[in-house]
Image 1 (cartoon, chains in turn green, orange):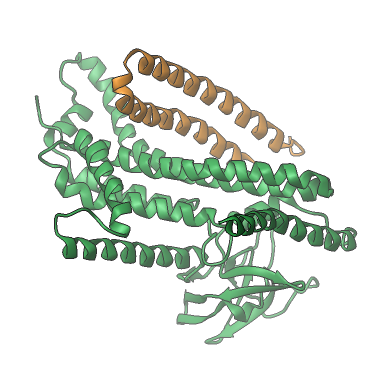
Image 2: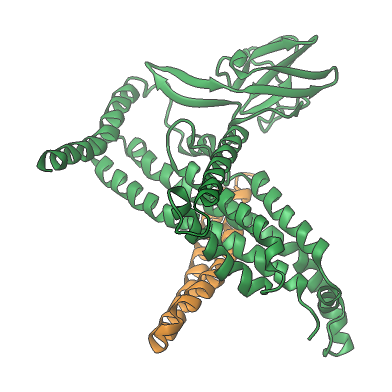
Length: 367
Length: 72
């Protein structure tokens, strides 16, 4: 027992020292190259929260180690596929890939048609005066880091739920076992606290699958975003297209299931003078679209803000160029990470809760 | 006008949004705590609705943050 405690203590101490030693070596490395490049905080943070075509794992002796992901492009000459390793970790449009008589190059995570000749900086794209590339873009259907992460969370979700379902088949109506023991309280919570109060006892059953899916999917993706090493760590739920899709599904369901009463209260609300009706109808109509947009922005901004805070606290060490801030910076990072664990669960809950609320509004009967 | 640093204005905007959101969330939190103290048996329900209301306020503050992000 005592031995176990000692081992635990040593492990925890190592856990704290490990990032510091990493930072120390990074610090040494940085001192050598101070003249070459300043540390660009904004660029680093934006690079870390952005999507990318290969999954960067770590830097080994100055060389990036990453998992290549398939690049799928729809071009003028049809479908083109290759692995992202053919770009050789390039981000500055200095490497071209030639497929089907077309040349492609990558600049800051976006794939462009490349020029035939490189310019004097070795770049294969032309720029306007704001340093934005003016080459035409390719329709990009690649399996990027975010898509990979989404597939991963789907597989984990399917495994979790199938295991839970199988255990119910085995034990019948008895007490849940194994992973089902963990899942059941959450599912019951969604049913009793989210679905039934908002949608109503008669109709809630039809919407439970959607609410549960959206809750667990957002929650799992949020948690994956918080884990800072390889198969996780991508900022999926801080991606506006991801949250847009989820909010759009909620909007579609709300509109499709809506009853007469919902539209009546929106366009010609009873019990209000006519001139007020004329005034309120446009506001309510705009509100119909603002609700899903708010859902989208809320999830996106919350998760992105969390990532930005953590990255900023870590970059403090490199901005101030001293190791003595690292204990404070790491402690604050841990503190924020713990808060984030709470925030990601609350955000998943709020998304589910508001979806249920909108469904309930759409389904309301006349009274 | 061309040399104007929009980053500073965006930072001020984000700060103002934080003040607004802070006041709003503080009021909700205060009222929820008071209600919970008066009726401890309602705690669960009050907590749930307080979180949802905070989410609404927070959304407005986050809108401002996103706008100031876009402005830079």
